[in-house]
Amino acid sequence: MKLVIGNKNYSSWSLRPWLLMHHAQLVFEEVNISLFTEEGASLIEQWCPAKRVPVLHDGPLVLWDSLAICEYIADKVTRIALWPERADERARARAISAEMHAGFADMRGEMPMNCRRVVNGFTPSLEAQIDINRIVQLFEDALQQSGGPWLFGHYTVADAMYAPVAARFHTYNIKLPVLSQVYVDRTLDDAPMKDWYAAARAETAVISKAEIPDVE
Ligand SMILES: N[C@@H](CCC(=O)N[C@@H](CS)C(=O)NCC(=O)O)C(=O)O
Image: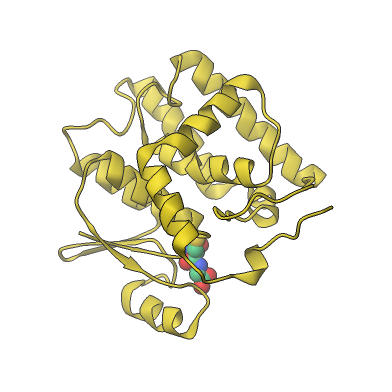
């Protein structure tokens, strides 16, 4: 299998299936594309039917879209459960994964993932704060119901979907209630996430629109 991904520092959509595939203990090749460069644009032409990353190539199957890739991996890997076992919990995990996939546009726009940075003095707009509040509510509800350590007890697609949110909360120093903060810390301390961060730190490409200035 080949997973085509963008810059590890910035590409939040790429991070999701990459993490899930590591949790699924799959061996796969990476095709790394430096986004918004000339070379990157020609690689996107070559590898990505929707002109976006991530894309999974598995034999003849070419699968674009982060959530579809996560669903495929969860179907394909049967020895490790990547969705909750109970139908009602699985339905809730799918709902919050879909909510992430389709939503939180204000937070995503204002707080681009940037693993290398901690931005000083950042204050979210009211709209972004509403997104943050909703995410905190769903973290708290899921963690209280499951008892943790992951949203549904063991690691699931939902945790992979929200991993870039944990990265953003860290970068923009968002104050969180205890349960949510413990969950964010666990996400950042997860072994594959640490490997992703190490690779992101080693990258030198800068995407200027994703660089939010510090406020002194
Ligand atoms: N809904 C898509 C979104 C993918 C997406 O927007 N990817 C961004 C990078 S994180 C991208 O490829 N941007 C390249 C471009 O806009 O040219 C998914 O879930 O995979």
